[in-house]
Picture 1 (cartoon, rainbow, N blue to C red):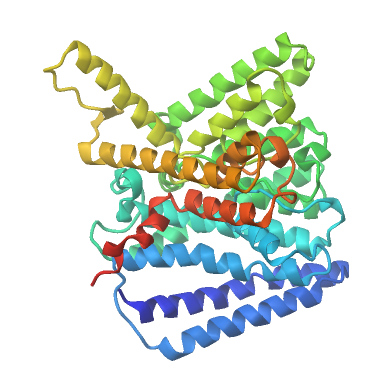
Picture 2 (spheres, one colour):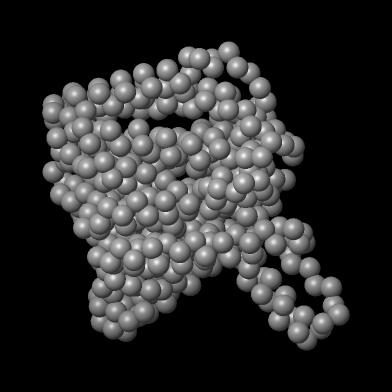
Length: 482
């Protein structure tokens, strides 16, 4: 373990992150909203801390190994989540407690979108912008993690993408090719954000709202500058643009990279995960539309509008709202919430277990049924026309098992703090899947939960964002042995 190199990277990371406090500071000065001192203080604390960590180890140069990659990846979200909480604590509004500020900061960086704040419409513009910016920065970090780093670390079946996405070479070092990959992904991510912001602005949002919502849309985050979320604008055009960019952003960015490089869109429809992703969204939308119309919840046109938006928002784990789906009839709240467990595609900003894993689990389950009929047959599991190795399938099942165990442990922990079953179940699901809104007491916000429950959910957000294994491996003795 190269601790000096890790400290050097951590120091640089903090110094770079301190620069992210300057845009909201500028917004504060433009709007004269009184939050400027909070951002100045946060900037200085973060910059000086990063400099003091970096200074003693500035000349250390060594190749990073896989284990170093795990530790840096975890520290990226933990440390930035802690330092990102300062403006929320120091600003007079919202003036959050330490646990609430860390919760809000981690929720932003992990693109979960769960909030402890009420009265969002009355927050200073700089704080509103900062919340959105946290999600945007977190989304970029997730893309680099998912497409460039996790495939090499082999997290829960993500090695499947080693050969199929732009990433590092297949050895145990974190190589310079990650830099090239990250740069290409950055251009794609930035282009989508600019296009989304322009779309919102032309559709009628103010420039401030357009930029702010483009940050959380492309990051699949769900934070909004209004308590009523996207429903505040009550615009079919804005909702259509939002749906389009949520769908695009929950697609594997490796496919976007290929489209950008080859100038073609045909490969999207030859990708089995993408086809299954669209099939799932379409199927759930039709079921939701049918139930809303049959139960008379809305008229036919309004049912279509609400069904499409809410299904895409929840299934991609964005968490925007135009309706209170938690109070929809019969099984719809549960159905939509379960969709978030699949989440977005691998290599996207979406949360959940990822569509590719669900697809492989279904295919393997079907193979086991076939084996009952033909016990001696050799039946490979294929993705498209490519057979999937047993090693990858075992990793996927291992991930699925650990995911469920973590879910149950978190659920019991929350219930032990006094939460009712519906609230506890949905709170864990919403944070572990990086969705945001839940059911019961957390349908609107998480501010009423006790502090212990909030810390548990902070861990759940990190576990979900880091693909579970990345965080859990740090607690194994084997990881720390020389």
